[in-house]
Amino acid sequence: MKVEHLSLLTVLLVAVALSAAGCTTTQPPVTTTVTPTPQVTAAQPGGSILVYAGAGLKAPMDEIGVLFTNKTGVSVHYTYGGSGVLISQMNLSRQGDAFVPGSTVEFTTAKNQGLVNSSQLVAYHVPVIAVRKGNPEGIKTIQDFTRPGLKVALGDANATAIGKAATKMFAKYNITADVEKNVVTRTPTINELTVIMNTGQADAAILTLDQVSPDKVDAVTIPATDNVVLVVPAGVTTFTKETLNAQKFVDFVASAEGKAVFEEHGFPVYPDPQFAGVKP
Image (cartoon, rainbow, N blue to C red; front, side, top):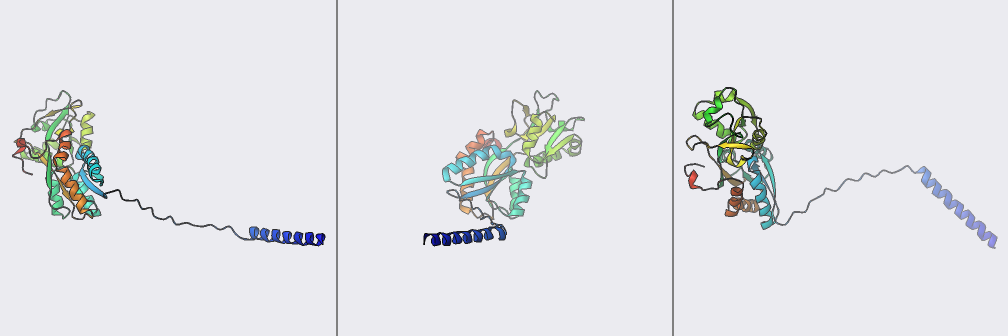
């Protein structure tokens, strides 16, 4: 009886083994393709906004963004660049929540294209003549930019507020063509123009006061009668989906606390009696 049971058990074990062997040798391998589930990042408390800002405003705007987030919980993301480039980006994407360009000229352009409406005025961009330390070329006025052999660096007039301002100053004295003979480079942002001067690649440039590092370059004041002082505005875009947060941000930029940050970074804040004659 025990032998019969053992034989039966042996037969069953052999059958199971053969069956298992058949499964592993006759079934082809199966490759499973898994479609990843899109990852959705949870919104931070208070939401998030995208701000288009002039490249020359990066230092104060970065600091303002941190302060605003700490106060409201709204995270701030920036796209920096020449104002002309930013306007093109806004036209193409129709995304973003606020616009803070280098001057009201660019803001007006954006407004005429239906990208923004009203603005608040924040600070002044004051053009100065930047020269190499010690001013070895003895440059005193914008008319000196016409001297033969002088290496001049300027901002792109189509992309930067400072480039447009310089163009207006030269046009006033009808010296544009003579200055152009000395231009060795035009940059798409004022930041790149600053680097060129700080590294001694040009003899002179039109920068703004806040961009001048006294340990690297000297600044020559441009008389008010010749200068084209710019006013920095801030406004909400017409296509924002974060209207409340965007308006809160613009209000903060134009507040006493926001303006104080601009002042710390070398910007005179709006309004200033010294620039009472400047029309935004």
